[in-house]
Image (tube, rainbow, N blue to C red; front, side, top):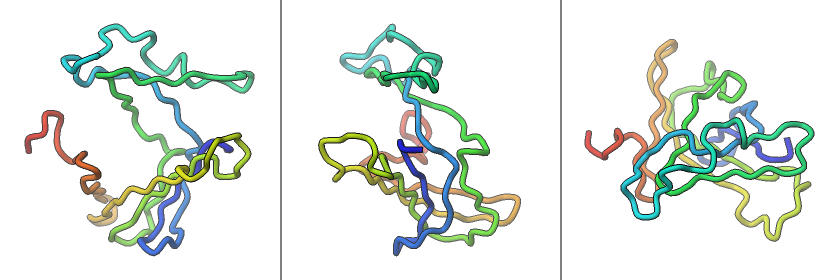
Length: 145
């Protein structure tokens, strides 16, 4: 719980709901583009077995080599409950080290925001993610619609 906090907020910063997700594990689960310069054809480890640690871990190493991506599905404990959230534009606010208990050189980069647009109707909700810093996650792999 000291690692991260995930919140859905209105554009003015008002809290809408909080996710049960508490941290993340970063691992090369899928080759994305092994033709890029410096791509790791055989990463040290793939999958999540070696990166998440457990309660007894004193440290852990999370890596994402060039050419690889980290893909996983959201589980119910990680998702936002959108049942009563009206359609509209919101932001996901991710705060690293939310309680300030982890030692850091700076906390100035601990908050990340990403815009999402909720639509659809009950039972058929949609979530659109506008492009961010040149990355359009709504495009299929390869960049063509």
